[in-house]
Length: 483
Image (cartoon, rainbow, N blue to C red; front, side):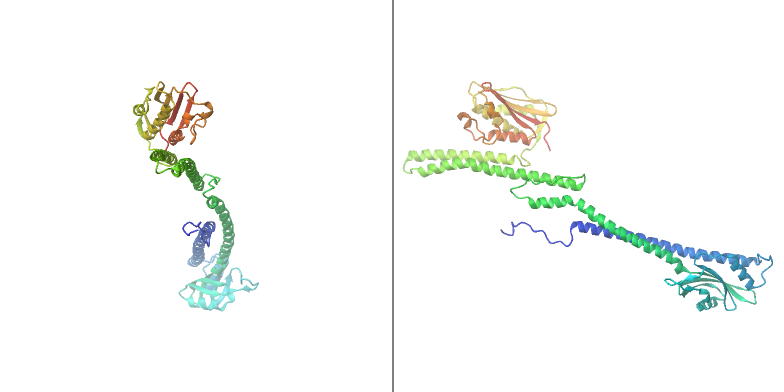
């Protein structure tokens, strides 16, 4: 088998569509979760910074208020020293979590208020009050005060210092915020969020894999069906489920298979019919040419006439088969708006030349219809030709038409001998010929063409007949041609 006709091989794929969809869902979900976590981290970090600043400002404002009044709330007397002011400030203030207050004078911290902080992952306590770095940081901030960051065993510590002096003693009121320890709880919550998000991502991945498989099942069925289809078996169809785009794709694919099956069936029938019907005239021609005596003029002339007649019959047969083959293809009929009465009269005038009969027109339908006037004319002429063949000179042949809101009818009626009832149901089959010799003269395709023209318009071809009382062929067509 050549490369051009060899069956296509599926390429090796690193990832299936199902895997790519799942991967895309995982990536988008992970980005969404990471973005949400990042946003929470940024917002919460900013909130903690504002909270630190607000807590420090509150403690310093309370100390500044007490210092500005200059009155000891316990005695009602003015403060007599810096030490008394600092002692009272520490007694009256209650620090928050991870917050401490320090009173500093004479070069070192003297008092503190606040919880003891534990070192992470150890049971050992850390007392910043005994940290020598605290002395250096506060001493370096005097006398102007301000805020400093101090690195300790428990992380960064924010110290805001408010200097105070009574002329004899220089001291400071310090607010200490253990900012890193405060952030540990927040970071712990973020780690918990990361764990929960990871578990959720795994669940989303499993759900995406399952859902993608369900959604892509029609596509896999399409691929399987396409692999199983051959030119000898086009019966494979896919079950349509749901009401979405993939269902529409499945229905479209099945409709395509219907058209292919019909086209292949028409092709096979054409080949079978052509092979069957052409074999006889070819055999006849071959036999007479083999027995031909070239020296016998009469024999040559007789054989020549017979061969030409058989060739004409074959040409007529091929032409009819081509019409039947085209009847299943789009464009076989070209509908247009026609006047039913005018079309009826036009056909009636045309068929009068087919034979010496008593021709008449029963009735003419009113109004317009969407039809292919040439194909309708072809069908009615064929019916009239059959009527002429199966009637005598004294018989009558009548054409007619009528219309309703939704349909239009054309008929050809004769007063001939009629048709055997046993033959009526097979009359429109290909190559069907009547049982009597007179009816077997044709090729048996004329009525098949009539039925094909009616079917192409979305209508039907029917026959009513009784032996000895004539025959009526009727075309019933929709008044508006199908799309």
